[in-house]
Image 1 (cartoon, rainbow, N blue to C red):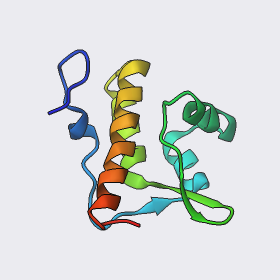
Image 2: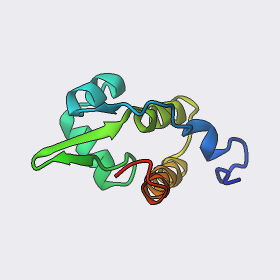
Image 3: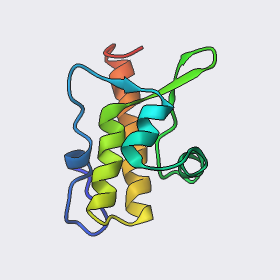
Length: 104
């Protein structure tokens, strides 16, 4: 089991995906995080929030459980490095789901 560097909380505790999967567009994500658009994009650029999924030629969305996992880590007082680890874990989980045929 992967753990945060402080060895207190498993990354997977923050990132358990519910079923059915729910995708939120940027306005919903911003409402959940209370960030502005610039902050949101800076966090993605700095590895502190997962990149969006392309759901159309000009549209992106984020799995709700990923947004909730990041919020939970922030509330728990996790460091930026710990949140980056969580983001990498979340993106890796997307790849595993795709390989299993769960998501395209």
